[in-house]
Every structure is written in structure tokens, then in C-alpha cells.
Length: 246
Image 1 (cartoon, one colour):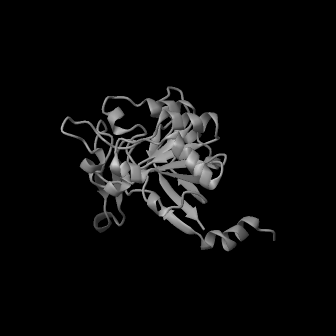
Image 2 (cartoon, one colour):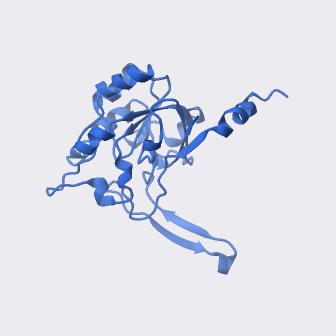
Image 3 (cartoon, one colour):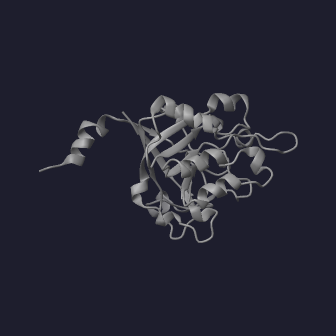
């Protein structure tokens, strides 16, 4: 029997390193401040019923989650419409964590992308680009995640419009991800400005928020395996992410 995919698993994937890029979600975790908190209720339990079932009440954009274009675009593509072919992608890690440690208001710059390509070559087609900022180390401290000053302005890093425009216009990037709660930096979201996220989702791209463990990955050479449930017409849902590297 010709089994090329089984051979690939035996010869390569079974020896690969798998890294979970997902936070386990729970009530009172860091989240977008306008969203209600998660609640849970055990409605069947093992001592009484022989099995356990828990009712979870949460918004779709909870924990490590996917945002579909419909999250910001009326009539945009929803979670269930994202093809399974996009759930396994080349993983690019854009690391700005040193700069973010010194200046939490920083964003990804076009020079960061050019520097990455000077070391690793052109970003591969259909890539998932993850922004490593070091912010996931603050999990699960909600106050540290928001990092608000005395005036209530949040300070956390994010993407920039120029970088995402480059991904759309000059590279065939399928999706992006980041460690913070938002695509835009905190100084923008504190003013109600979500224009960078609106731009990206408006290009029929999707994204993952609240990624974990990016510090454990190489900047090039890994794959991202992303999965999530399939709510009909859903704008977002908690996701499970795994990086696969040699």
C-alpha cells in the first residue's frame, strides 16, 4: 500500500516537537472589558447521574480565539466558512518582545518584517504570522494585561496598519495572531480606535487573539495547526492552536 501521508507522520511528524499555543480559559481571565464574564454551571454530576455535564456561558471572543471577518464586517465570512485547508499553515513569528518590554505602546514595523526576511527569506505564501510581544507572560493577571495608567489608558503592543497592508498587498498572508487582547495597541483601543483590526478583517482575513507560548518557537520553519468548533454564522469562537517544529 502506498501511504505517503502515513510515511510523513512516521518519518517526520512523530519525531516533531508540538507546542500548545493556547491558554486554558476560565472565569475572570483577561478579556475585552466590554464583554461579560464567563459563567459555568454543573447540570449533571458523576455522584448523582453517573456523568458530568457543564453549561458554559461565554462570548465567542473568549480566551485564545479566532476572529472571523464577520466580527467586524456585516455579511463577512463567518467561522464556519473558513476552509479546513487554512487550518494548517506555515508559521512566521515576528518578534518585537525586546522593544515591547521597553515600550509597551510599540507596534510591529515594516522594518521588522524586512529584517525577518533578510534572515529567513520571503514570507511563504499562505502563512500565518504571529506577533511575539512577550505579553502572554502576564497571563492570567487581568490588570497586568490591560496595563492601564492613572488616567485609565491601556498600554500594550499591537499591529500597525502599514505592516498589515504589506501582508495584503505584497505578501499572500492568510491570517495573523497576537498575544494581547486586541489587534490594535492599547493606546488606540482606549480611545475606541480599532481601525487596524477593522482593516485586516475587512480584507477577508482572519486572526487569532490571546496566543500563548510564542517564546518557545523559532521565528521560521514551524507549522501552525489551528482548530475551532463550527458555529453556524459565528463571528468568533475559542480555538486550539498547536505549533509543529522539527
